[in-house]
Length: 198
Image (cartoon, rainbow, N blue to C red):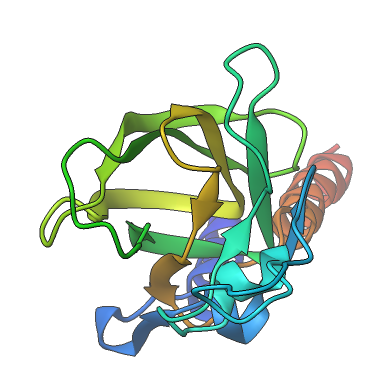
């Protein structure tokens, strides 16, 4: 039992709880953004082209990702942000600024999270509306994730996002493989102890 207690103490010391005081927008620090469509821009643009997915995580509300076409529910446009490590996330904020300032203009979104970029968990669905209040959507969380995906399945605009902000602790959470390795060490210690007793 002393060996088990010692190993548990090692796990606690090496993988301490994260501190809420270190919260920051992780997307521009660690994020790599990808998409299934982006627009290179044209004459008389409101925002500065090109409208590539990295514009949605650059920390600047005056730039944007734009798919270059209206959304389609059967094949929605999306942006995926890969934080490159797993982080404890407290909230995600989506921005969809534009210049019409009319409740007629909106776009729908589906927000997902994932640990591996293949299996997705739906966090929230909603609308971003082109007015002074509803162009922003804040989604509270208490989750560990590496990937964030925003789908745009419907709307009166071309599919776009000005910013995806992912707020969490700036220190990555421990790699599960390391925890598994320590668990394997525990099993090995127990096996050795049983052999010594015989």
